[in-house]
Image (cartoon, rainbow, N blue to C red; front, side, top):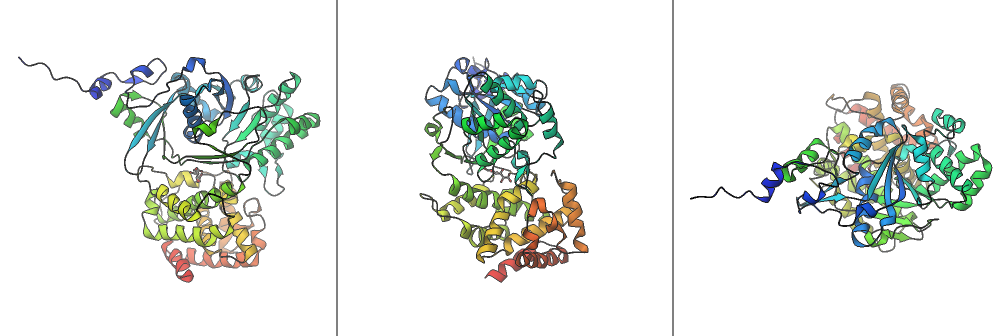
Length: 511
Ligand code: CS2
């Protein structure tokens, strides 16, 4: 007599495909790390605006990691989406009791899966702005953190001030209880806290911006001052705005990620997040109303974050932009594809060594050469398919932070500028033509898409036309040395069918 073959653990889970939820957590395969703390005890202490992949692979991960090791139950996170575009995230998270899976893909193929439990609520601001204001002004809320993208700060780069020409900002001034922008929300909530005799909360930016805390402070105060100077003064005294460097490469979630969890573990997670194993968070310890002990989960608290953020923005983020723009025109699709191409890998390394590194101050405890090696290894992770389309999203807000400061510093010091100049010239071609060198349509998403296209189109009449877009390039056009180098690159890019030719030429000129 033969018994029916035993089902393997995997087949058992497969046969009962489980929608991810609190109640189903116990049934999820042991191969997936799950919160082992009591989520029902977790109270909201942090409100986070901008729940995308990066927040979910980074701050929520650190907080979950902390909760796994110590009692941090007062630091649960309530996610907030302000816009219509956040509706799907709100719905998926709600359905899953705010749980999701983090899929950490190592370069060698190892995958660590982990259900993150630190997010315990979500509010959609466009449906109920008052609920967001109330949550932010609750006595339990100590921190409002945000990832609103580099372009979300409503900065007028010409004046360096809050941009009151933005229709939504004007709307917020006139409708303080129905805001649209995060600045309107923060101001409304801080007003309510003051009126209720509560202390302020810390406003914590997690975006890739130099001195992100200082900029946030400037924008919040700029807006608040126009609305209520007394309140602005209170905020100035009450609210901490720590600067921070944040880092974890997090590509856009794909259907393949969803299918992977379903096929391997029988888990239905409608919106998991994939990321690399590397993770870094360097934060200034200037919180005004307490904070989680994130250092116990691997974060670094330092007195001055400047050298870390400059290093990361000018090497990692700028490195991404260099590959993103040149690679898009060349026809590469992902970052790992770029760095496995010798030409692109060498161009990147030269840009880092010859143009970015000389502008950096030494960081104590960090070996820049080793940092660059590690970046190239991270970029090369073949299991992180980071699309160039994501890298090139909103380049007009990224390049002024990632790349242009390096150019400016080199112009000041007499350093090399041609690697960067070719990138800007190629970006002009990209904005002008909207296709790669094989004639394939590029997917361009940028707040300034039309303005970029217009000024790039002027190149045939005036080689320097693109640089005249002051909100992006500031005074670069007025610098003769840069403008000349740029014009030369424009000639090369427009004269060649293949961007590899000017890339090689830049490198030959260096050797
Ligand atoms: C990327 C970043 O936006 C970009 O262009 O450089 O999203 C980058 O992946 C992260 O900052 C990594 O920490």
